[in-house]
Length: 210
Length: 210
DNA sequence: AATTAATTAGACGATTGGTCTAATATTACC
DNA sequence: GGTAATATTAGACCAATCGTCTAATTAATT
Image (cartoon, rainbow over all chains, first blue to last red; front, side, top):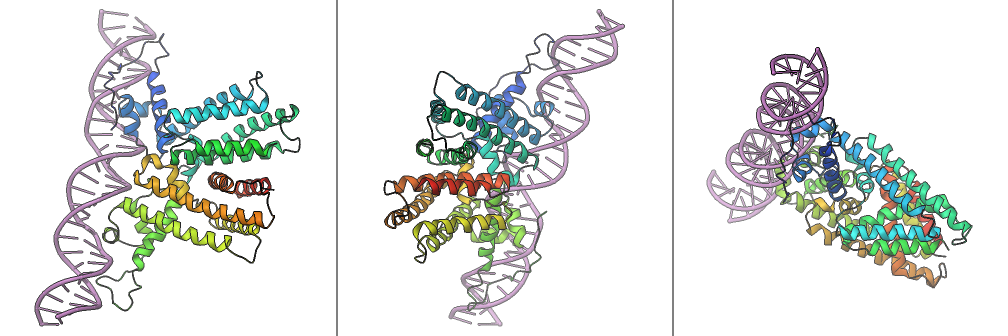
């Protein structure tokens, strides 16, 4: 099941110059990201995260204080990554505002397809299991939504200026609805293993703005 | 943490007349329902399900073949329960079609509030953790959505007849969008511990039908 | 009364979970 | 160049988890 990479890792103190050699930590984060977007936090064991990149258990607690701390850092990383992705699309002046949103949507659909609809959204996954998670995650996750929402709202405002959507649209509210529905669509895409929910919802949403 | 009820259970073969005394199984299902809607499948231990209603482990494996079988039965029960609830509202001829949907929505919001937004939707929860669940759950969960969708679609058709919504509406598609978004809204309601997502999404949706 | 059926009690073992301490490899410092 | 400092790993450790299994208890059936 788990592909355990027999990579022999460098022991002992690492050379100072190649300080970039905190590769292990990055590996752990990447592995965790993959697994947590697939299966969530509680059902993913440390062993699986470690085994996938051939890192021994001892290392884990060298880099992270606990599994919870690891999760928290993962959210942080996911957020920065995703904010960049959003900005890349939504601030792309070579496209009209609404087309930028559509480009983002299509890129995400392609991404999910590439992973065979096995991976979902980290924030959505953790949100759903909130009942079993440390309470400190809640605020962190809520904040992410706020940041994402602001970006969409801004884009919608610009779409108004460009006369792509009705000026009567409440951008903040619409952005809120977008993320709410989008998370639902990601969930169903994972369940149905198809892009249908993503396409149907986004088409509906975009159409509702006119 | 776990409130263990010191309920003394009747041991031995139960009296025939009070055949209704298969209460234990019902208790387990109820307890499981509570916990799984809160925390999902993987993070809920058998011991917690049992402890809450003071049932010993031996009983569990008398009534259910495995944790997986238990989960599957829970989905089945949840579905029948929810289908009844939907029918109760959506087939209530004392109200106009769209008002029935609104009544359902309001009832659900009240229900979530009653549980302090700690409990979500069983189907949504399990859908999200699908990556860690037995593959057999997938079809079961997808079917539930189809049944729910049909009920909403029918209601929307009737709303057309009653001239409450535009005849141009594609009822099936709109019903699909509704459940997609609604699951997302339930997720956020749990995360935000507030009814805002439920209210905002449903208002937006209903408005979009006009 | 003896036997059979239904149910609970709870010990048990294998496995996995997260955590922690001691050992080890490497570099830095004097 | 030898010793101290430090980053990293190895793997022991214990608690929890799932599932199983046998004994005990009670009622129905004969």
